[in-house]
Image (cartoon, rainbow, N blue to C red; front, side, top):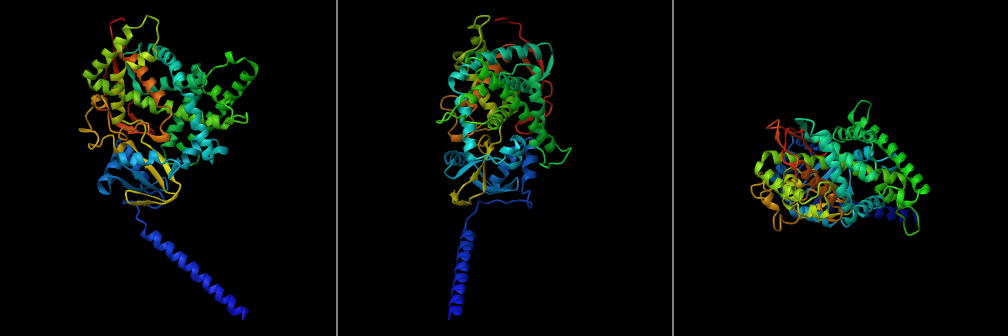
Length: 482
């Protein structure tokens, strides 16, 4: 009797499990996934995605699939992951507005392998929050106002040393040199050019590695990038240790008030340090990467478009000369001067609309959810990109035309112009980047006019879009003295 009873229970259990499996299978079968294709096994459409960037037309990967599948959402496979690409202003708004509800920030694992120390490759969401909060708290308005005269004096010195002695220069490498040196000065108080170079050279290897095939064998760009990341972290840890010694041995008044000091002095409610040295180091790597790549790309394309459109250059020059003439001979720019640069900022924004410094970021679904009638399963990755809106005629009429007036009055509709993202994960350095771009614009246009050496220079994209020849220009110094 016990045997048959146990057998009956076993049969019923098997039937129950089978029913549950069939229900789950039916449920998953009826789930309506976004339209699209995943491409090749394992690699998906990663090659097509990368090649579109290499050709300088990353928007084509997005636009082709929006036309073929949906203007709202399509699926693909990138970096060995199922990926839902959210499109248009509504897609941007949805992702930006549902952080920690449906999605969390995500980076491809090979990015983390290069950018983070090995012990932090599986860092927690709590660590991510700490890192972001420290940047937001540091880049407060009072800090940014203190930065402006430093940016101005460094821009003047940079132009005097690296531009004025020459008739022809390449904008991209020089703007990269300036923005990176500025980041080292403001975030770490490093001013020695040789010390700056110890960071800049490995960063060039990191950028090459992050945009290469992630195969970690000796001799590959990816392998060199990993080694470069280790070099940078080791150098940063030494700088942090030295700063700790200074904080212990000196009065606060003599210690540099930069990002390192800010994070070392930040304490939680129990009086303990908010971040350990490795987290601080990782945070600085992110800040330096932005200083090395995205802002220098934005400055480069601002100068490109000013060369392309002399009437726009003349309006920027007029605005900046009014500011210059209001200053004393030794006065540096300040917050009030920045607020007067309205037209110049419209020009910079239009440059970033046409050539976004970033192609967007990624999220990970933390629960099943639906959008536009489609199911996004937990674990899928999501991608937003400025390329679905910035050149979309639905939001920007005649989208290929360079027209700074788009940003007058109320400007573009919400969630259509997104060079810095949006929502809780909006770029915390966006205001820093605005100041950096405007201060450089002020100094370069009041000193020079210029012409492009290559009229139809091709564009390619690494982490940011760049002219393949570095935007060589002929300089024409102004004769006026203000």
